[in-house]
Every structure is written in C-alpha cells, then in structure tokens.
Length: 200
Length: 200
Image (cartoon, chains in turn cyan, blue):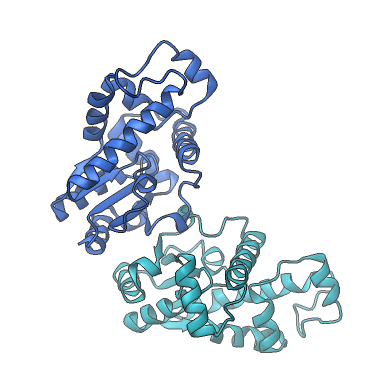
C-alpha cells in the first residue's frame, strides 16, 4: 500500500483533477489549494502571493531584488535567504507534516522530491499533447486562444525550471517517477483507476 | 482498442519480459528476436550482425569505415548510405509490415517512432532503478559484478543515442510515451496487467 501519492503534472493535463479523483477513490486527503493555505498560515504571507510564487519562481536575482521588501513573518525570516528559497523551506516542512499525518494525494510542489526518503510513496507524472492542453485551457481556465500555445509552453517551462532548481532532477523524465501517464490518450478516469490500483 | 503495443525499455528493466506477458494476455504476436530474424532475411546480413548493430550503433564514421566492406544484399545496397542507416531502412519497412499484418507487441527498434502516424498504437516505456537492473543483469544475463553499473549505463546510453539519432526525440522522456512504468517498483506482472487493460 502506498500511503502518499505525489502528482507532478504539465499545465492543462488535468493532473490536478486526476489527483482529486484518485484521492476520492482511495479515501485519501487531497492537497493542492489547501496546501497553499496551510503554507500561507505558516509563513504569514498572503495566499495569493504564495500561489503566484509557489511554482513559478526560482531564486532569480531580479525576482528577489523586486521582492526585497517582503520578508516572512516568523522563524523563516532570514534576510540572507532569497524569498523563493524561504517559501521552499516552508513548503518542505508542511509537505513532510501532512505526509506524516495520514494517507494523502499531493499535487505539484516538488512533493515527490521532498518525500523521496519514504518508501510508501507512489510518484506519478501526468502530461498530454498540446491540442489536449489547449482544449482544457480554453474550457477550464478561460484562456485566450491568442498565443495560447506559447503561454502554455511558458507555464510548463517555468514548472520545469522551478523543479530543477530545487531538486537538481529533470522534470518529466520517466526514470524519476513510478508511472507517467498521457491523460489525453488514456483519459482522466482511467488514469485515476490506474493510480488507485497501484496505491491501494 | 490498441492493435499495436510498442515497448521501449532500459537495459535490465524486464521490458522484454513484460512485453511478452502483455502479448500473451492480449493474444497478440510478439516481436523482438523474431523481428531481427525477419530483418536478417530481408537484408541478407547475418542474424548475429544485425542483433549486434540493431540498437547499438548510430552512423558513426568509425563504425562505417570499419564495416566498409559489408553491403546489404538487395535493393538497399546503396553504397553512399552508411550501413547503420541501411539497417534502419530495412527495420522501418519490416516494422510497418508486421504492424499492418495484425495485432502485435514490438519491443525496442524505435517502433514507436516508426509507427507514429498510426492512431492504434500504445507506446510504453519501461525503466527501473539501478539496483533492480543489477539484480536482473546478474540473474538473467550472467553479467559479471565487476563494473556492472558502468556496463549497464553504457548500454542505456547507447540505446538513447541510437534512438535520438534516428528519431530526433529524447529516449525515456515521459511526454514521448502514452505510459511509462518503473518495473522494479510496480512489478512485471502488474505492468503487463496495466498494458493489457489499456490496449484491450
């Protein structure tokens, strides 16, 4: 039995939805937006700010100069550490905490890497072809058709950079996951079934 | 229903065995060594030579200079084309032919790329952790423990180079497959079950 399922996912692949379906089937807690709220509480930063920065930024000089006036409110308030790194430290603490609390599905946030020492994790990566991403992006995120492909690529590139910056591991390379699934080809429900069968 | 299952696999991951199990469950033909025999017949080269070169070589200058005296026996005998490229041309023809003949599982040989225009293919990639590869390599291939990790890495590197040379696509990157599976974590039988359920 795998007590923790981590899901990395390309933008528009439906990975979050698949995680939710799998969590329901397994009777596991589901963390994504909720995780952000927990993080915000811990760090004293606003939900919106953390959501914005949580998966997009690496500790680029420009970002941290621009954000130079903002500091975390508690013990993570070390002015020598870039803000994005502080967020990652908080994130690491919370992900370890929720994994210890009980069975759960965690979407994104480098959870696979953070929990890599545990042997009760199933690490999943969800992706799909560009046409399927565009369809989802228009349908569920109301994204504008203009430049949509470029926008989606930008989002995935940012996720890959963020992941690599904090883990030193390439995002979306098969060997770093127990299973990877093309949600467009396989279908969200079937993906969730496979995850359920592997984790239960 | 997916009429053709292609399986890319790391050395020592049991991908060939999983392909065989899946083919049995599905009642599909299985091609690996058999494919090599077919290729040999077509090209007039010996089985051993094709097996040796089929997945290892790219068209390196040295290899083709060394092999300069050997030519294919029929219409593929174009002296301006490197021998490794001639083998790839034969391979492409045969893989298309067997996919047209009926439901099948094809292991290796860039079959996923060669059949990329078909929409009845399930493209699978099997990998596993180094310790699991070593265990299989010792058990099934009688490989010597000395330098075994280096030897295994060399074999996978060669497969990756060959694949990239002929397809321009990175081997083992999730987005290039419908599903990738860590056979060590999931187990061969379960991998075959998942493939069966997705293809049937």
